[in-house]
Image (cartoon, rainbow, N blue to C red; front, side, top):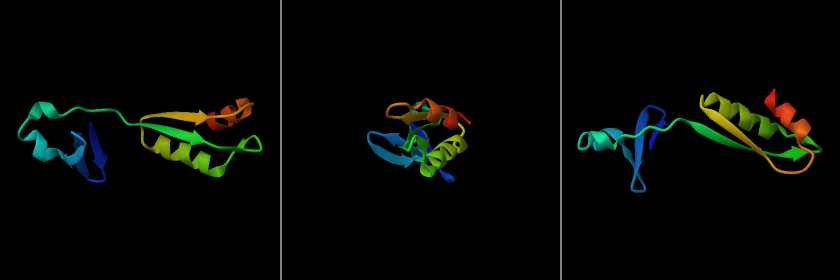
Length: 85
């Protein structure tokens, strides 16, 4: 996996994050790419999403990859419509 953290690129190998340049110079086939994805755990209060949940969705969208929202509970159809907006 390759992670982009600000201007640095790090690679996760054998449980360690290391600078990508130090790894690819010895083994160019070591690079693998994964698209960005996020999971937003959403919280309801009185049947409506709380502000921090909406902020989590906005932050996930800014990543540019896929975003999955998780709402647990009953009678969530109205919350799903609100989140989709």
